[in-house]
Image 1 (cartoon, rainbow, N blue to C red):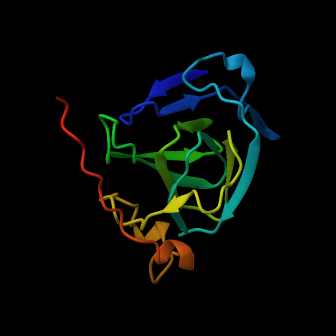
Image 2: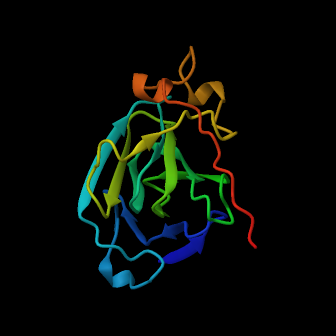
Length: 182
């Protein structure tokens, strides 16, 4: 297992061992035995999301940590730092994930998250350290942050991306002005 920091503060990729043979492959999604303070959390909510090719989900903000893994298909996973006190505030990072890469991403609370599904089907598993909290979570339009979403015709269906009404109609993000350090 290898933990690597991304350019977003407190956000890490995690490369795990993959065991593969003629039957397929096996890989760990998460293990307490990884004992690393960077990614430790009490995971108490696990969610599975299935998307067709061309879907963009996000950008979704939540006050909890997430640990994401793509188990089938492939996706362009995007993290946006929405913590005004962070030195990487408003920076974003895109990371390709797939079941074959055995790569996962730890997303710290306060960061926005979204993804683009490049294959059909694409299945993502989220571990969260809190349960869904309607009214607390926020959505921002996927074009608010200058993200360079994959646009090659082979990666999206004719007519453009597929978004839910909620994501298509999400408001643009308005940056919070940082207070100067005195």
